[in-house]
Amino acid sequence: MREDIMRTVDHTLLDPCATWNEIRQICDDAILYGTASVCIPAAYVKHAKEYVGEKMKICTVIGFPNGYSTTETKIFETKDAIQNGADEIDMVIHIGAVKDGKYDEVREEIQKIKEACGSKILKVIIETCLLTEDEKIRMCHVVTEAGADYIKTSTGFSSGGATPEDVALFKDHVGPDVKIKAAGGISSFEDGERFLSLGADRLGTSRLVKILKETSAESRLL
Image (cartoon, rainbow, N blue to C red):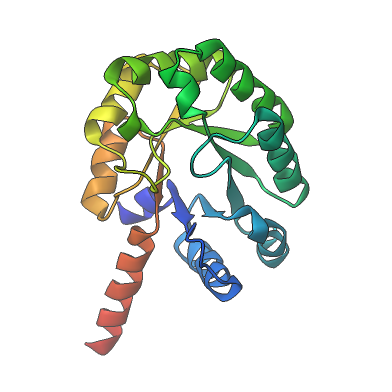
């Protein structure tokens, strides 16, 4: 069961103080434990891709963590990341535009970034902790209409992370071709199993690999 859960994990390190040695370590851990990808800052994408080759998918973040970069800036970030070897892109929406009810603008931005992604996976972070229920539902529709591959709960840098209620809400309102990524605050395999049972397809976390490493270390001491 744990192996199945690990195959859904984007093993994540987005700390602004992260060093290359730390990024290299999470790449090694991701390969060892069979995660879906590593999710790392864009500055490390090229080096990380050269390091892992085809052994692990590289995911990075765009417009992160606040989402209020211009669309043109996000498009440039996306193209640059893909040129450097990124396999997956997690973008943050302009949350203020949602608050202003400018859903057409948000949809157009997602569409343009998806176009820049080409065949690469695009996940759209809507930062659920900052949205009302109606705004979350509207964004499920917008992400679906824009043709993104995933809707994602959270950056992990705001006031809250993924909740079971939000994942269930996504499952009820996204289109059939849109997958769900739960991220932020996933601290146990029980958490991961619950989110997956509610409809999540990916989990954004670093904690599950840490648990496996700690368990392995304890076993060696016995």
